Length: 446
Image (cartoon, rainbow, N blue to C red):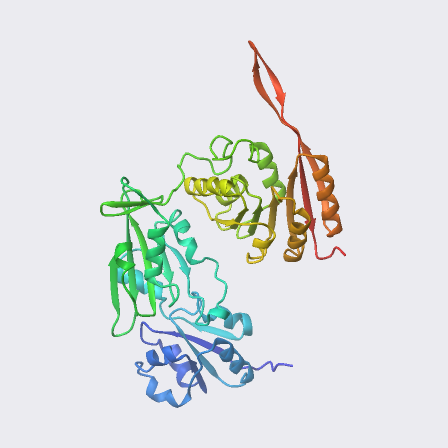
């Protein structure tokens, strides 16, 4: 059993201002001071360093740091952290490992606070994100947002502040902004990138420039990137640099959040989930923010488009094998602006590398429904699959496969009639009925 009288574990942020009296007292009375090699160099500049340097232990690996703390729980330990430990820092890991009752956090300023003060921009309207996944590429932690999400986030926010690392660096961010935008020659918005390099160090440097300028430069670590859209009413995504404008395809503000119509979506004739069916499919999926959604046999991507607009924090994967449909998919994604990842290939093979889903829509299977459902069954312990079918044979096959894979199956038939002219009068013309199959699975199902 763990002793109940364990010493507090103190996590003290350093880097930007002198230690406050409480932090100083805790540090001077500690038995062990843990730090990384980089923060050791920072700590050497503090007045308290000479008094405690014999108690400083440098451990660069986070897992080894946690294990040392766990093996020395009766000692009075201080863990030095960069800036505010609870802002994308080690504080979260330490609290998770040792509990809120034992851990005390004494923060410094965050690097984001310092960055915005240096460039003299308010930061209460900025979106804050980290691309700092850790030094080991094999063990890099999964981040809520990735490099590829930056253009999408710029559609929603006028300012982004990004914690970087050596792999996800300022020049790569600038190149991404250039490569994901198409050239236009009109629009009122400009974009500026600030790189706040080595904040708090004697050789601190602030660089500002256009994406094309930043993309050609190299930067020292650590650094923070701030992207600011400028111009009157800069809500939206039009961003440009001098004589060249980059338009990242934001949707018209008059478009509804939900309810894209058949005529608004680029598609091959007859190869699209009809408006009313699409609405029911999405309702049956019971989607939620930050889910992983697979749209298998996406076609023109109508379901993915609606999901991405309703749930901007979801990770949407539109899987399609037909090159002609991929063209429609890309066109629709550009026009409506979305967080859709287009996957060109045959399911289930291309599903292997995707993150495991929370929700799946199967609009087309290419004759591989058995294999696709089998793969989803392995990858999604709990969740919902929705399929559409127009023939009784497809309905029967889908139900049989789903039941064999321990899903609870529910089926509805949707019959739609549309008002059409008939001479001087009108009549309701029926469309082919569509079966919507919903399959749910729980870990409790044998």
